[in-house]
Image (cartoon, rainbow, N blue to C red; front, side, top):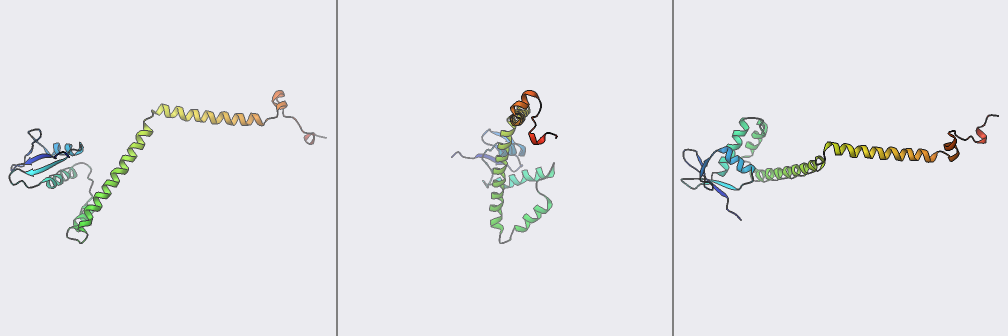
Length: 165
């Protein structure tokens, strides 16, 4: 398994990506996450793992601007779990819930792309063809139920009981 990318955090709060030998921003770290890159952030002086701290900082910045994911009520409930007997279970529960959500999202996107893989015109053409086929079969059924002599003369034949006396 490949080693995670190492990002060093210096006392001046700057982040240094050792893979590209360049300073990066928190937005660059967020892009690494979106790209599926494995990385760890370590303190340049002490070697302490700061990955979680940086991830929380990215979340906090994104929660401040735009549409937040976490409501005040949700954050309050999460804070209540700290020190609770169920604190150890909460992280595992949230991870599993997020994985289930991601799996469902992937499945939904796949189904949507299969559906939308067709152009609107091709979908409309298929629908029209099905409707035409159903209309033709309905007409065939009606035509076949008309007696042969009535179809030739254009009138329905009368049965003896239907004649006026």
